[in-house]
Length: 119
Image (cartoon, rainbow, N blue to C red; front, side, top):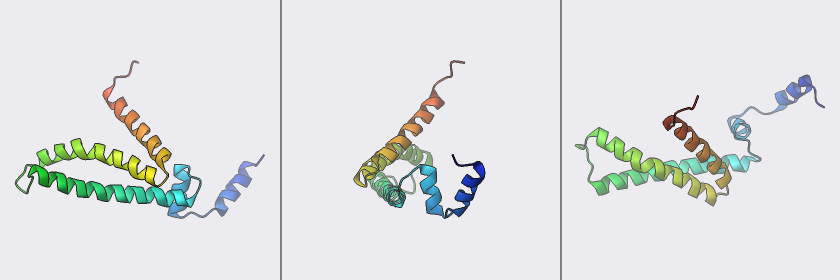
């Protein structure tokens, strides 16, 4: 059994860079997973920007379209698209389980917002 003092000494030896901290925070096994997940977030964000421009073009939105209309359409279409793309790209890079667990947590948090507590 490792004492608390020994554990802190061992922890002090560990590198404290950003990627390593993400690996620990996310509970990942390798740095490959960290890079794959960051790539998924990057590609998903870029895809959503492309889809938004395309969607707004198809709908005929321009600078004269009211911001509130653009916002509602963006949330209604892009939020689900983003979540789906995270799962798709995550699957392609072998990180489906990571993103599926994040999705479940997010859906649970949203569900809690719209349900009343029974206490």
